[in-house]
Structures are given as C-alpha cells and as structure tokens.
Image (cartoon, rainbow, N blue to C red; front, side):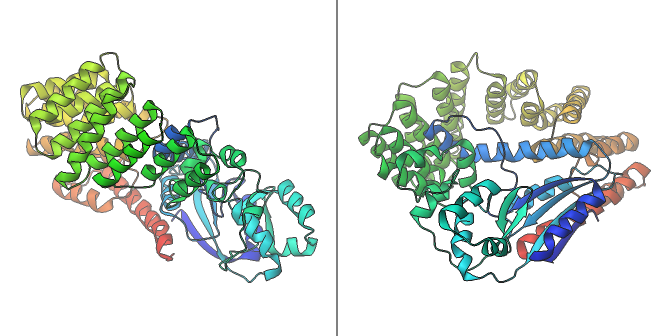
Length: 516
C-alpha cells in the first residue's frame, strides 16, 4: 500500500514529521487544524454578492487547483511524500483531497501518502485564552503574530510552550482541544486575518468587511451557516444596499434547496432594500437554479417565476440567456418538452457570440431535448466542433458517441474518442467528470466491437478506459476480462494496479468513520 495512517502521541508528531522529511527528501506537508488543507490562491477585491453566490464554485476551483499543484509536484519524480497532519476528524473534502493525491502518485516511483493523527493529551486550563485565539485564527498563526498576542496579554513563556507547537514557522495547538474555550468579540478583534466564522463576532464594520475574500467565502461554504452569520453581522453593523444584498446572497448560498415561499420572500426583501438590479438578477437566477432541481412540480413553478424575474431586470444579455437556460431545465422536469426546447433556442439566439463553453453547454442541452431526432446528432456535432478543451469536450463527447454508434457512424465515433483521449492526456489535470466521459466513450466502442466479435479491438478500447481510470475498480476489470474470454497482459496488469489503488482509497475513506 502507498497510504499510511499513523496515530501518534501529540508530543512525538514533530519528530515523526522530521523523520519523514529525512527519509523522503521531498515532502509536501499540510496542517489540518481547522481550515481546509487545500485552500490556497491569490486574493483580489471581490463584489460581495457575486463572490458569495459563487462560493461553492470557488471552493471546487481552489480544490482542483491544489490537486493540480500536487500532481505537478509528484510528476517531477523520485521519492516524494504527501503528509497531512490531522488535529480533528477530517471533513469529506479533506478525505477527497487525500484520495485525489493518492490517485496522482506516479506508478513505479517511491511515493506515498502519510496521515498523522493525534493521540490527544491534556492541556492546562490556564492556557485556554491562547487556545481560543488560535481557534479564532483558524488553528494556526505565524510565529510573529503569536508573539504579538503574548506581549499584549503577558502570557508566560513556559505556558506558551506547553499549549502550542511549531510547524514550519507557524504556531498551532500542542494537542487537539475538545473542551469549550472562552471566545469573545474582544479576542476576535485581535486576529489579523480572521476566517469569516470569526469575523461574524466582530463589532467593527470596517474590520468585518476587510475579512471578506473569495477564499474566505469558499472556506465558509463548507461550514454550515457561517456565511449567513457573517453577512448578517455585517448588515447589522453597516446597513446599506451592498451589505443587504450580501446578506440575502448568503441566505441563498448556505442552502442546498429552498422553498418557493422563501424565494419569494428573498426577492421581495431585495426590492424593499433597493438592492442593485444586477444583484437582484443574480439572486433570482441562483434561487431559480435551486428550485428547478426540486422534485416537487409546485416548487419548480416557483423556479419559472424566479427566472422570469431575472429577465425582467436591466441586466446583461448573458444573464438573460442563462435564465432561459435555467427555465428550460424546470420545463424539462415538468415534461414540457416543447416549452423546454423553445426556452433553450431563445438562449442560443441571445448568445450568438457567446464563449465556446456556453455554446457547447447550450447546444448539448438542446440536443438532449431533441434526442431521437436527426437534429439531435447535428446539434451534438456542432457542440463538438465548438469544444476547445477537455472540460467542454467532456460535456458533449459521451452523448455524441452514443448517437453516432446508434446511427452506425463508427468511424466518426472513433475519431471523436481519439480526440477526447488526446485532450485527456494533454490536460494539466483531470477530474471525475472527464474520467467518466472517457470511460463511457471507450466502453461504448469496446462493447460494440465485442458484440461484432472483434475481440482485439474491444480489448484496445477497454484498455484505453481502464488505464485512465484513477479510482481503483478491480471488479470492473475482472468483468471485462470475463467478457473478453482471454487475459491480455496489459489488462491483467491494470487489474492488479486497480486493486492496490482501491485498498488505499478505502483506507483513506475509513478516516471519516474513525477507522484506519
């Protein structure tokens, strides 16, 4: 296995980390003491409402960016280890990050993932103020900031050494802390760059506003109602159009589903608070997107009202087109295919000069609505022609290949698959969506070749799929080998590699259950 999970007494962890650095030479170390281990990226001024409504997308974008950085670092080759120190139970995203790192270890190289878990010790309660400030700061701070706190509060050097520990120039807890700590607005005000969960306690509106960044919103997106508490506090401290809009945006962003009643209340309140039309349109569109996915037809009817509200405001054409696209989803779910097609065509007409990624999405969605007609294949072809990278190609490739194979256009289907594989292999990094698209395309071609009795060609396409699947699936490869009725060495080798990856990914998943 390439994954090791070590439970170590807190006092010994710095030494274990030093040993790992000496053994591997190249160690990429992450400290998980309260903030996402993968949350990095430059911060620039952000519009509050836009950044809050995009926080989930921003969170995923930063996650993928760090995975790409790990992949590039591992690709340099040689002995390398990704080491993550966990003070508390990992989040689902933390485990997902560890799994993504494992799937990018270079086969044949001495590379590994090591997780260090604390065996908790007891800390003196006299140090609770220090621990509270560390918690308010997100779990760790630069040495200079902690020394500033110490000077301001008069903490004893021995007490600081007892309750804190040093990692690469930063101070963190000496061991995990489970007891309640004395949080207060006064302590929160001393944190230089507080997370939004701490900024929600601030009483200075300028400092509260300065705490906001796209990264801070992305972090808060995975923490319950933190965005709503932060934005609500900001609005109370400084009530104006901008903070009112941000508060309403946070109420939307903190939810995975909403009711039609809540949507109407949010939009009505946006009008009462004189929120900018562009921000009201963003709110209406975001609410419509949530409502359109609901299983209840009555709720989906509210989605249509939200999209109509977004279109009625004086906003850019792209936003109007997006609202028609969203309305098509709600109509499709209501089985109003004619209405969905009309709405989608309107979106396309509005976006004649739209960027390629939007064209691909709109054309593909319209083709799906027209599935089973000659027009559908032509629309898929247009979408494929507009696809300029792996992300856009991923969106259309599987549907296009299925349509081509159903029409016995096998040569064109193979050409599409070949280009998709080239884009996949050249990409800086690949995600689950692109891996699924590659698998679907290759398996469809392989299954058709196998049905025609062309076993060698079927094996070639099966191999193209399984060799690019990062998630271990030995059972799937076993099924393929059984269907082929033979044992091609390359596929057998892939089967063994998949078994190792699967065991490692399961070990990492076990972290969520306290196993491993």
